[in-house]
Image 1: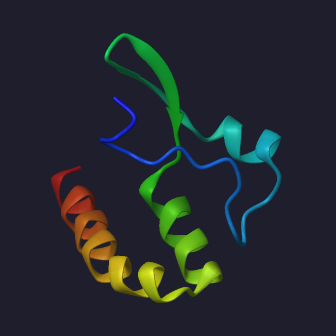
Image 2 (image 1 turned 90 degrees about the horizontal axis):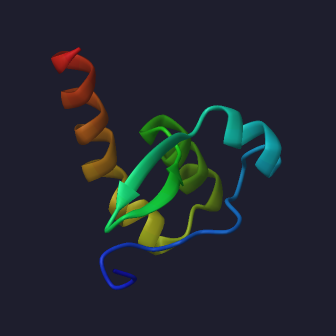
Length: 72
């Protein structure tokens, strides 16, 4: 399971864990419950981190966010 996604324990530019936890969603992956932040919060963190790999990921994440919003 661990090779399919990254587990992140701290994110740049976001409030503390307790505040972000409130807005997270519980999902089951292979029978294990994990908390997932909304895509908008992940995007905000990647913008704040501003690393090369985050900058590279932002266009795809922003496009995904637009598609999700249109489907609502």
